[in-house]
Amino acid sequence: MTDTAVRVDGNTLRLPGGVAVRFVRTLRLPETGTHPLPPGIGEFPVRRVADYGDRVPEAMRARGGVMLPVYLREAMWLSFAGTREPAALQVGVGKVCAVSGRPWSDRLARDPQNYVVLPRQPWLDGINSGPGRVRQFVAVPLGLGATVEGQVTGEEVWGGVQLQSFPLSEGALARWREEERRRAEAARRVPPPAAGFGAAGPLAAPGSAPASAASGPARRPRAAAAMGLGAGGSLRQEVYRDDRSPGDWAERPAGRVFVHLLTPPEWRRITGEAPPPSPVDRAAYTRAGLPWYDYYDQDADDLAPADTLQGVRPVGDWLGDDHDPWQAPAAQQVHPLKDAPGHPVQDGDW
Image (cartoon, rainbow, N blue to C red; front, side, top):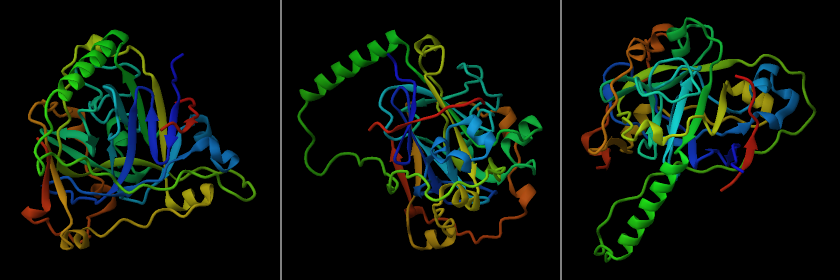
């Protein structure tokens, strides 16, 4: 029997089909100009909604899933490192597709493409809004109209992030596994490279302790301070076009999960845990000489930007100018990249 459960493994979400997703804290970019990929500065802690009973507002319990804390105007990116077999992953922001700008759907589409292809897409930093560019995911409260959801649909009902995974069809998966077997067998016949040569492995954000349930007496639930994702600064990142046949994918999703975004005070109230420290100062990071990144895959094609998402305005139009100091990284700081079961997550109605 196929396991359709989404599980939490530390701070990693594991969706059926070998999909691994981490939510990574990062530096928020200025809303003008186009920038290299900002670094990861640690994982967001992820907890299951079902573990906190009546501490969780009723609407959150009904939707199930997981939750994580974010600060106002904090930026994040989604890491797919650890994904094993090919999979299609839909990413929603307030139930608006972050790739196509279309409404959330339980079916894959090609025109426009409404998913990313894993493991070819190593991460996603924002909405697909320009040729070879995305606009950064930035947390904002619902009710201002600043979220992608609010600007695209005219309403702010859902907030959060939605994920849905589709594995290869049975036949396509069997073919892929046979190709991988042959590739591995051929590789065993090739002598290893000389010492001193070879590619560096992927960078990983610092790990954190497994989730733990809150202690102490239960409190009366109340409405959560709901958060959604708006659009921040522009950065250089391609969203890759799927080169497989549409029939290679399963018709229905294998798993899905609703990711609730909480303010730090609400996180503390529900979980009893201290939220992560406030985001690091961008100029201090750059002055310290720490790395930024450029990623390019010459064998992959970039998707055309979504017309709907190109029109999304940055959160600064609602929250005011960004007065944090900005110091662009020096050329030598920009690094080119490339040329375990956990507890199941309870799903709900959404």
